[in-house]
Structures are given as C-alpha cells and as structure tokens.
Length: 306
Image (tube, rainbow, N blue to C red):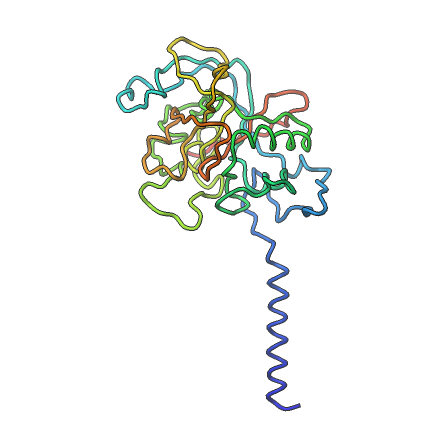
C-alpha cells in the first residue's frame, strides 16, 4: 500500500467516526428547565407512543399556589389617561377559592410530549424544547391539548380565568403593586422587542427572567397567554369569581408578547381579545388547576429574592 492510499484511508476513517458521533448526538439537547423538570429527551418516538407510567412524576408542570383574596382588577385610576378603554374601569374582584397556576409558560417539550403523533405536534415558529409553546389557538389548547394532558396525568388541568390570571400576575396577596408582573422595570421581568430585532428566536427560555412576588415567571412578555374567558367590557360593580361573558365571539389573552415594541401591553392589567381559532407566534399559555384530592401535590414555594 502506498503512502498516499494509506493517508486517504486514514482520513476517511476519521470522517466516518466524526459523522457517527454527530448523528449519535444530534437529537439531544442540554436540559435547562422544562416546566420545572429536567430531562434530556422524550422517552418514545412517533411510531411507538408509550407514555411513561411515571408521567406525572417526571413531566408534571410545576405549579404555584395562589391563595384566595380580593384585589382591584383593571387599569387603576391614576393611570386612566394612559389606558385602553377595554382595560377600564377598575373594579373590585374577590376570588373565594385557592388555585394553582403554572410557574412557567407551557414549553414546547411538554406540548410535544402530549401531542406526539398529531397534526399539532410541533406548531411553534421558534424552535426550542424550553421555549414557550406558541402558534396555538384557544381551540387547540382547550379541545386538543388539555383533554390529552388530563388523560395522561389523571388530573383536571385548565386555563386560568382572566381574574385568576391577573391576581397571580399582580402577586396575589403578596402584591407590591408593580406595574408589570414582579417589577416596575419591564426589562427585569419581560421579554419584548423594545425596538430591537432578535434572531433567530425572539422568545426566551421560560424562567430566564426575574419572578414575581409569588415566584411565577414571564407573566409580562415572552408570549401572550390565553385565558378561559370570553371577552366583555368591564363594569365598575364589585364581582366575585368572575368568569367572563356568556356570549361572545372573542376570547381573552394576557401579558403581552415578544413582539411588543412598547411597555404598555406588558402591564398586569392589559388585555387583548381575538377569535378563539387565532394562531400566531405571539400566542401561548400557562396552566391552572383547582385543588382537589387528585389534583396536585403542593410544593414549597420559594419567595424570590428582591
């Protein structure tokens, strides 16, 4: 064998070894945070849909307890000149029941785990296991995702009501009265455009920014969050456990999104309404659940450092 042939064979072997190593690693990602749980990869493939028996222990979203309370919902009087009409008037709301709400926005990893093998398996425009799921409609969530998740988990996850969402965003009974969820400075707590262009992913990994008073992340910015309510205009009279309009073609979303160039839409009382089948890379959601004997194990809540 000539020196030239030996060199060619040796070089070919090196390329083959590198290719094998790359293929072996191509489907793995570095775990960061996935709805409060760490995991390298999904435990099954499209062609072999076998959710693990310990699904709840491994993949159950981390939830935060929000205790019942009373708060002022909507645009406060001191900001009325700078508020959209749909955010007014401010009114007293009482929530009589404790509930749990997601510590993080639902991630793409959790969505794919539940929706594996369906047409809605991977709808997001900006790909990443630990980025928030987006490009999903209210109909997709309520009619497709939630029934499948609840069948796997044996629980009754749901979307929060608009009042539950705002009370949690404000910090519940521990509220400090911030304009945004967890701060008066949107750059501390929110992912939003702010006149900049982000490529390729304008969304950020859930939980990357400062939490609010209850330890909940991203309730300002990143993606808008669908809530359960149908849209209606506010009235000034006090309300108890409001659940939105009975008849409306519009559903509500909250929190603002990465696409917002200004801070107004990130405020804890800002609201948006649109049709329930609307899909956009600015729309995602977080989960809620009511306490019950089969609902969720209460986890110790970490009070964020200020």
